[in-house]
Length: 232
Image (cartoon, rainbow, N blue to C red; front, top):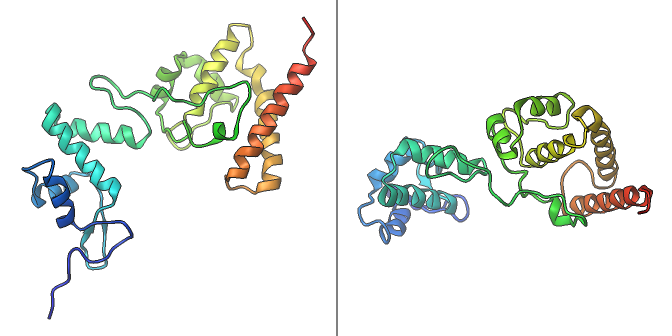
C-alpha cells in the first residue's frame, strides 16, 4: 500500500514541510525539518494540517519562519523575544530593538478632503493595549478614561484600533481650547447617524462603496461646518 505523500495537495498556495525546507535552506544552510517542527512546537508558526495530519505552510508561514531564522542568525535574539516581536507584528505594531513595540507612523489622518482610501483598513487593523494606545497618542490616563466614559474611544475586547490614536490626539488638542470629552459627544452622535445612513444603502458589511460614501459624507459635513463659520 502506497504511503501518503506529505507534500500532497492541501489548501491552495500551501507547501509541505519538505518544500519549505528547500526554500529556507537556500538562505539558512543549517535549518532542518526538526528545527521547523521545534519552532512550531514553540508556537512561532502554526501551519494548517491536511486530513492525514501533514503540515501545509502558507506563504505567510514561510515568511514568519524566515523572520525567526533571520532574527536568530543576525541579531542573536532568544525565542522569547522573537515571539514577542511576532505578537507585536500580528497586532499591527512595529517591534522595537529595545523597549516596547510602537505603532507605525502611517496612521489614519484627518485630511481636509477625505477620499475613499482614508476609510480603508490603514490603522484600524492595529490592536493596541491600553498602555500602548496612551503612549502612541501621548495623552494622560485621565483624558483617555474620559474619552472611554463618553464612548469616544471604544475597545474591542482588550484592544483598541488605530483610529483610537487619532481620536485621542485630536481630543487632546481640543482640550487646549477648553473643549472637554463631554463636549465631544455630539460628534459621536453625528458619526453614528452618518454610519446609519451609509448602512441603509450598503448594508452592515464594509465594502468599497461604504468607503466612498463615508468619504462623501465627511466632505459634506466639513463643507457644512465651514459654510456656517463667520467670514473673516
